Image (tube, rainbow, N blue to C red; front, top):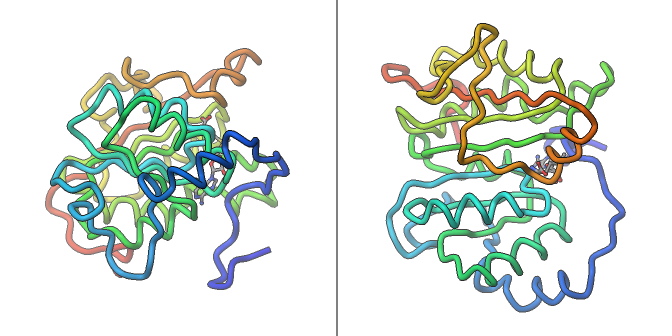
Length: 241
Ligand SMILES: C[S@@+](CC[C@H](N)C(=O)[O-])C[C@H]1O[C@@H](n2cnc3c(N)ncnc32)[C@H](O)[C@@H]1O
């Protein structure tokens, strides 16, 4: 079913029940680490109480990789976004257990979050193992599509990065062609090594995610695609809002 604004859902509705521990974490920790977005611009200085580069992760799943990356990167702030309530409970619990001060959690659609960011300010956008929607008739549900890439590019600062990873080769190929079509992005592996096909060498700092572990155990290959926002590009359609 489409959303009220006509945008299609990019996620599968999951029945997974919330555990008592996850419910407790939501009840007790949301006030500390959760962000209820309104309609105004997201103001990181107010939310984190400091000015630091901002990283947004769309689709954190159960959040284990999110916590590991944030703990290893204390000088940047992380806004972790997903629609899955049990995962948010798990992430809140783990953030508190690790004593992290640089993570906040949003329950909602990552595209709505991007629209609330000030254009040209985001240090990094992570999209790790988005639902692949492999059937052709479902491709329109994929998160990484032309409008999303335009919106993402518009939110990145010059030198900021869009980092996608997937184990679904056709989606990886589509990501590469979409990035190539966006003039304000350079597919440079984020300064790392890029292979002959355009895929980035997996950065050592990116932990194996829960979804990725299953893919690797199933014998799948994993593809990282990392592009950098290039200088000298004016407002594109995605800059609106
Ligand atoms: C296949 S899972 C991968 C989770 C995690 N990144 C991992 O690798 O284990 C994709 C996740 O993206 C979330 N997701 C899909 N579309 C989203 C959207 N528009 N905004 C926020 N989260 C979304 C889903 O709820 C799901 O948790």
